[in-house]
Structure formats: C-alpha cells, structure tokens
Image (cartoon, rainbow, N blue to C red; front, side):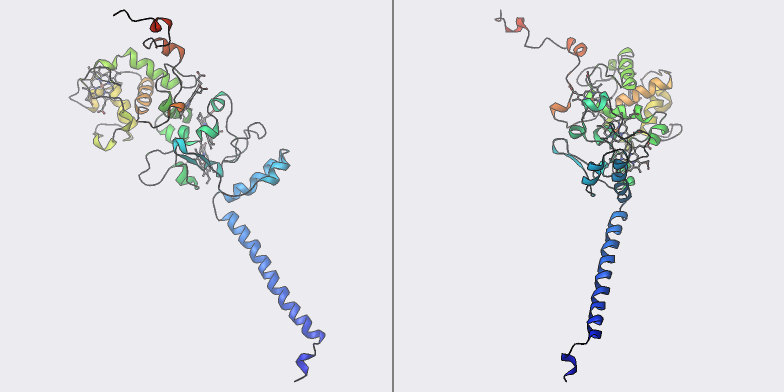
Length: 315
Ligand code: HEC
Ligand code: HEC
Ligand code: HEC
Ligand code: HEC
C-alpha cells in the first residue's frame, strides 16, 4: 500500500511522456486545422501567396498586416456586396505590382476610368456583372441558377463577336445612357450615332418620344428572351444574336414585319444591339448618374438658372 505514495523517477517520466504526446498531438492538430482552413477554400491559396508577393515587391509591412479571410466592398446605397477581392487581392495595387502578375492577383488596370469610378464607391459588379457575394470562381463569374447578370467574360464577349472591353460598355451605359458620347465607350457611341442617323424613333418610342408602328424600346434590355421566336436565327440562339440579325434583315427574323431590312454591316448591328440591350430599368441613386455633358446639356430646354428665367413674367 505504500508503494504508490512514494513516487519513483520512473513514474514521473511516464507521466511527462503522456503529456508530451498529448501536447504534440494537439499542436500538430492545430497546424493541420490551420492548413485545412487555408486550403479548403478556392481563395485560400491566393491569400497564402499574396503576402509573399507584397513582401517581394518591398511591402513587408503590409504583408505582415495582411489578415486572411473573406474580403468585400460593401455599398448599401447600390446593393453591392462584392467579394471579388477575396481572390482579386492585387486589384488596388497597380502602383506597386506589375500587370504581368497572374490572375487573380493582377492589379486592376488603373488610369482615368478608375479615378472616375473609385472602387469604394463603385465596387466591381456594376461594371463587370457577376455575382458579387460569391466566393468561388464559378459562382462569382457565372452566377447561380436563374442569375441574369453573368460576368461579361472575354469568352462570353467573344461568342458574340466582341471583346470583353466592348461588351462591358453595355453596363457602362446603364449609368451613361443620357451622355451624347462617352470617352472609352466607342461601340455604344457608335450605336447612339446610328440610332439618330437611321431615325429608329420614326416607328419606335424611346423614353416618351417617337412613333408607335413598332414596340416601345425604352426598356428593351429587360425583355424576356423566352417570348421571342428564335427559329430563324442563325448560329447561337441568344437574344443578342436575335437582335443583331433582326437589325440586319428584320424580315428574315420576323417575316411579316414593317421594319425595313437595313442590310447594315454586322459591326453596326452589334453596336446598336449593345445599345438597345443596355436600356434596362435602373435603381442607381442620382449621385451615380453622370451629369449630362455640356454638349448634351446645350440641347436640353433652358434651365431655370439663366437670367431671363428670373425676369418677371409678362403674361
Ligand atoms: C474564388 C476566386 C475568385 C473570385 C471570388 C472572383 N474571381 Fe475573377 N478570377 C479568378 C481567377 C482564378 C481568374 C483567372 C482566370 C479564370 O480562372 O477565369 C479570374 C479572372 C477574372 C477576370 C479576367 C477574365 C479573363 O479570363 O481574363 C475578370 C474580369 C474577373 N476575374 C472578374 C471578377 C469579378 C468581377 C468578380 C466578382 C463578381 C470575381 N472575378 C470573383 C478568381 C476569382
Ligand atoms: C468603372 C468600371 C469598372 C469597375 C468599377 C471595375 N472594373 Fe475591372 N475592368 C474594367 C474595364 C473597362 C476593364 C478592361 C480594361 C482593359 O482591358 O484595359 C477591366 C478589367 C478587369 C480585369 C481584367 C484585367 C486584365 O488584366 O485583363 C479584372 C480581373 C477586373 N477588371 C476585376 C475587377 C474587380 C475585382 C473590380 C472591383 C474591385 C473591378 N474590376 C472594378 C472596368 C471596371
Ligand atoms: C454605376 C454607374 C456608372 C457605371 C456603371 C459607369 N460609370 Fe462612368 N461615371 C459615372 C459617374 C457618376 C461619373 C461622374 C463622375 C464625375 O462627375 O466625376 C462617371 C464618369 C465617367 C467618365 C468621365 C466623364 C467626363 O466627362 O469626365 C468616363 C469617361 C466614364 N465615366 C466612362 C465609363 C466607362 C467606360 C464605364 C464602363 C467601363 C463606366 N463609365 C461605367 C457612373 C458610372
Ligand atoms: C418603319 C418602321 C420601323 C423602323 C424605321 C424601325 N423599326 Fe424596329 N420594328 C418595327 C416593327 C413593326 C417591329 C415589330 C415586328 C418585328 O419584330 O420586326 C419592330 C421591332 C423592333 C425590335 C424588336 C422589339 C421587340 O421587343 O419585339 C427592335 C429591337 C427594333 N425594332 C429596333 C429598331 C431599331 C434600332 C431601328 C433603327 C435602326 C428600328 N427598329 C427601325 C418597325 C420599325
């Protein structure tokens, strides 16, 4: 009965050994959980790599301060929650990181465009489309079931004969609709010129002006493609293609139409289609809608700020 009360050096060792094993297992377990947390997500590896890259370009301080996790730009006024930057971590580092860096870490092309549309006010999806809150490539770039705003990727644009840059002008025009012409929106600008030159409003009413031989086009971009007849559309049965081919040869797509066969070049038809499909109902608050350019303003009725408007009325 006395034996257990008299500790031997042996039993000390045995107890310490047990603790050591337990603590080591715990330690390795924690390390494993750390790795698992970092790599189980699609974005984990990018966030692992990013501080190393920052360090490599002389930003050791920022690299040390980098906290892994989901990152987002949240702009409640325009219902934007863009987590794109969970992967596109270099987006705001164009002054430091080279454009040759592989995606998704490439810094965003900077310049006037971003100066006029700072990320903290515009996020990403107002220009690019896509599902902002998603944190996998597929869900973010393409969207889930029923998602109507896929990201305008180079591949999607190419399938309609455009570059990504050109196709994105459709979204630029959500806000720039009332500009006469906008720098950096050459395709849309061309569409706007063609719309005037071809006098489409002889038959179509747009924002309260024009004839009614054809349907109103004010919000044509909101149309439901399922209500259109695609049986005569050549190639891909997209609404974009329906419009391009209809603008070139209306009678081939809608045989009984009164709309003329314009026989216009395909690039003109694409420009007009991009313009027409940009006409969607928007809920951007006024500060997101650019003031009309001076040229456009000059064509508006005289505003009440001119001296003559302040003069007493004569009638
Ligand atoms: C889970 C990580 C991840 C998220 C989230 C993510 N992206 Fe990407 N993105 C990538 C990767 C990786 C690429 C490289 C090319 C590819 O895989 O498509 C890429 C490429 C791109 C490209 C260039 C397309 C090309 O093929 O050259 C654009 C534009 C882009 N992303 C925009 C966005 C926008 C906008 C969002 C948010 C709606 C977003 N991404 C969310 C990982 C991501
Ligand atoms: C004002 C509109 C606008 C906003 C806001 C915007 N982008 Fe872009 N983005 C563009 C345009 C236009 C291009 C194509 C630029 C070019 O080809 O020179 C582009 C290019 C890209 C590319 C491809 C770059 C490359 O090198 O090919 C990625 C990726 C991207 N943007 C991601 C984002 C992310 C992420 C955000 C949000 C943090 C964002 N963009 C916000 C307009 C915008
Ligand atoms: C969500 C709305 C919105 C979107 C989308 C948008 N813009 Fe803008 N844009 C604005 C606002 C608002 C201004 C005015 C900024 C100011 O007055 O300084 C502006 C300013 C500009 C200017 C400067 C105009 C000038 O006369 O100086 C250019 C050029 C421009 N945008 C081009 C584009 C392009 C190209 C795209 C698409 C890649 C785009 N915008 C997408 C809202 C938008
Ligand atoms: C002489 C009258 C006339 C002119 C001019 C005309 N259209 Fe049409 N348009 C119609 C008629 C009628 C329809 C309905 C039958 C059809 O779909 O072709 C139509 C249909 C359309 C549609 C499909 C609308 C929908 O949702 O069903 C679009 C888009 C359109 N026109 C665009 C244009 C554009 C852009 C121009 C100028 C380049 C133009 N139209 C000039 C008569 C005209």
